[in-house]
Image 1 (cartoon, rainbow, N blue to C red):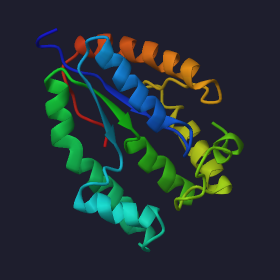
Image 2 (image 1 turned 135 degrees about the vertical axis):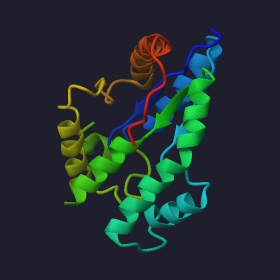
Image 3 (image 1 turned 90 degrees about the vertical axis):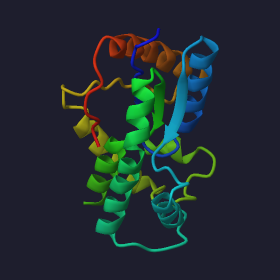
Image 4 (image 1 turned 180 degrees about the vertical axis):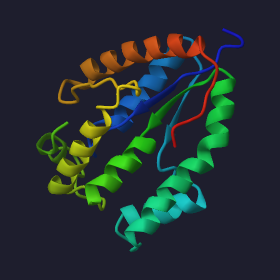
Length: 188
């Protein structure tokens, strides 16, 4: 496997759809199978920008909507050098959200939320409101109409294990495909 680039696998969706759980499970499964894989999150809350976003999301501070959008974008840009380095080293990166969330959540300001809202801690963070999550879902559905993007839709209402198996199989296909292509620009 030397010289093969890693795949960038992005788990997107509304809040409480299971992205974090599935991301951790996928990385564990890939590593157990002998692949090099790591989990990254957007926002990355450990950076200075990430700390501002975390405070905002946890309703501890207020920020103007345009500034929030720019901070989310800047937080992704902070990770680009690391993402490119890891991918070129053959590490598959599983992203718990990425740029598409930025588009969907910003669009929503201008899984079905009923199921997501029944999951633990729904409503704890700023955007975890049923009506807002419905608008986010609509924005994701609009993004999925772009046939140049390689979207795979998974029904998050299935069991955790069934969702995991589907994501794992799709990820292995994506890894094989990515290994055949040079590393290009990242969609930010």
